[in-house]
Length: 432
Ligand code: ATP
Ligand code: MG
Image 1 (cartoon, rainbow, N blue to C red):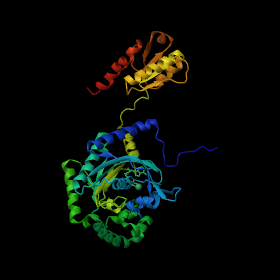
Image 2 (image 1 turned 30 degrees about the vertical axis):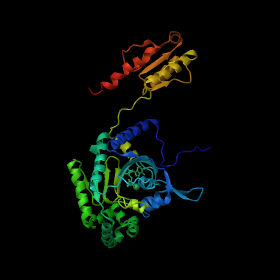
Image 3 (image 1 turned 120 degrees about the vertical axis):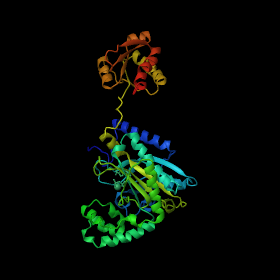
């Protein structure tokens, strides 16, 4: 029989990796909370129409990347390819938009892409969205928050902020006309994808990685020259606020983002350590989206970061905290009455010392083989229950790591205090 394997591009994340993921998630959650953002959890499946209407019909995502299917009722559903659309839908549906909302979410997203390092079909994002603030102070806040996050993670030296304004939709219409007229004169030199985009979504051509197309774009009209007064002023203010906070950035006039709903400020954090998958966080303003999805005309702005890419970057930069062993304490017993005594004592120990990782040997075996497992577990101590210990209501504590520390047999009542005493110096003297 052939064995069943996971779907291509959808990976298992194993325990030694989840430690890293949890570190990332914890750090991000702490930073977001420190700016007053509240967590929202949306469903993973939404009506297909939600994404068609928000992301845009002629985007890569909607054209060729969505996992869509009909449910048993014949309704077209889609595994969410991103979080903003669902977040906006939830904010409208739950009447959240009467006041300013600062929200964040975390979870899996699905896109049918060619799997490679840093690009999966099920991938994971942490995103933030703010509703109800039209002014550029919030653009700066969101960017400062991400900058703080990179510092908290120790990767700030290796990510660069790219910034642009794509103006209003009227600005982009005027620019689009100029761009199409320029590129049409050189149509034959465009790559096939861009030739098609010329008719459907010409702004996306600015994103092309094709060398010939890139060369043509050198002489093309620049979106920045088409911005109206308000877009220009807002962009200048974002830059001013970032300068004042000493956050450096590169203005990249060809940064347009791949989704249709953006306007004004767009940004990406990029690293050169992950090859072609170098964007670790991307976002921008989307003032028309709430209304477009049936809500009031409430402005919005947000970003999303890719957890796979951030974990890869943390690994590449060796910026991860030391991995913890699977156990602090490994418990060995000689079976029969000793096993019963150990079970009871361990339950009290776990209550007395929450956070201590106590792994009990299961499945029997000789003391020798159990102690081998204890050593392999990385635990600092083995707790040993034999017949003598049971008879005397004691337990033997065997240090597994520290050289020169002696093995001791203690009254059961003293074990918690002993472990606490021996554990404390490790955590409190660090860095002193
Ligand atoms: P890319 O240009 O790399 O395809 P994107 O513009 O499609 O990215 P967004 O929709 O802006 O990506 O998503 C925000 C972030 O989510 C990206 O910057 C990236 O870190 C991450 N991301 C997007 N698609 C994937 C994927 N297929 N696998 C892993 N991470 C992804
Ligand atoms: Mg993409």
